[in-house]
Length: 176
Image (cartoon, rainbow, N blue to C red; front, top):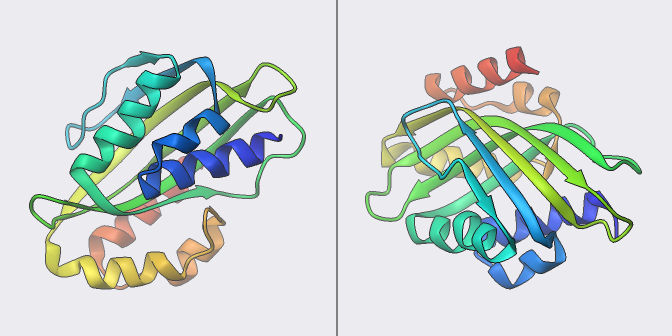
């Protein structure tokens, strides 16, 4: 298995609320490190083990959010053991319908030939909460983007005429 496959499996598990897939992406003793630079969302700073990571990033996440689209920005990794990429997420809150859009960076580490992730560091640079009325426009846009690998160029060319979304994409471009 490759790191690309492990990343794609993680995205499928998280976005689709499929915790049973996480064992195909993460080693049993994997570590999750969260660097959250915004007050708009919270996560524990460190989680150890497949079960804890699955609960945090899939099961508990799916209790609060739906319509989740996570994009890894740029091309998939080649045959490497460590890989960094930017990410963009669009989702809605189950309780209120409010739309969330945010970005940051993933750093993936594999330690063996199995291709399973042994460490994932997620940095959340920005997360914005938008009114539910913008959901249809934002999710129509997200559903047309290449998934889960999307280039910054495609994002820039296709960004909807919604100031908060344009700001996120602009900020994301500056961080890359």
